[in-house]
Length: 428
Image 1: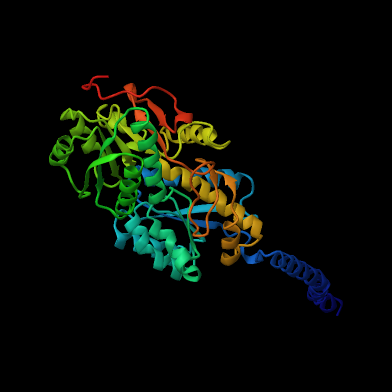
Image 2: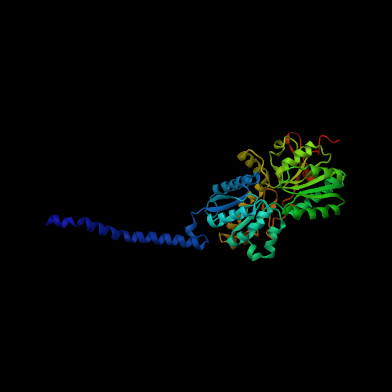
């Protein structure tokens, strides 16, 4: 009897133990509920605390603009994550190759928004691709910070139809109209004012951003006293520039302004050099901004003056440290998309922190109030969500390729770092 009595003791003990644990479990559950409620009241859903923030990056991954976009975003992410992330959430990057094709670009946006569920998009390169992507970005209701495409038509959508396109911002570069005005300033101040070169030829690739830019450039240059001897567009697939260079020679121009991004800058430089064209050239040549361009063309870009948006100079407190860290990490000098990419990550992070929320509309309102030192100047957005240009904001800098691949800033004059040289076959 004694044995049978004690045989039930373990079961009794287990029941008592379970009963005694009930208040403890209830207290734990109440504590969890209380913490979740406090986080929700703070504008941060508790379930999302450990979930990373996904930065979707649509870019032309095979080009240096695409590689530098990714490197700059990773730099900014590493810095922010090292400080605890944004409202306690770490950042991660997902990439989709948009190439330079509108259909591929649309697929990239769909992949990042529908499949990857990106919280924000940072990227872009070709204006035609970006314009094709806009309706899909709008439908996905995902914030997009553009860093490569320059057509004013992109951000014009925001002003025309704010409710549908409020998600679109351009952190860089300055739009084509602003770029045109900067080239006009270069023509007026340096080419005409200092060198006496009034006879100008303008050639550009047949792309949307160039079509937006050239009419503004031609009108502005004429107004400051330039004699425009030739205006010519060429196909982006052109591989033989001999006929075009012959037209430039025959025009009587003293200086050649080029506007190109997708065409072969390398081929153009080599053919200009090998033909000993007696006309110096420069302008907006995106691929000649690459740090390895001079070496890549065997030094044949000697004397070319290429526009850029930042150089390793104290434009803001961020400029020199950014250039040095980028060079340390990659071994190369960054191109322009890197500036906007890095700044966009910080602009988004600061907007979320000001909004104290990841809610898209709240973050958009906070982004509209952005004012921070960027890589190329103070970053602020105008009423069209376009990056502000001129003065303390982003500008075009004109730097010349000189001996041994050194780049010397020519314009603006106050930032000049050396003397201009002419092509070696021309009289100095």
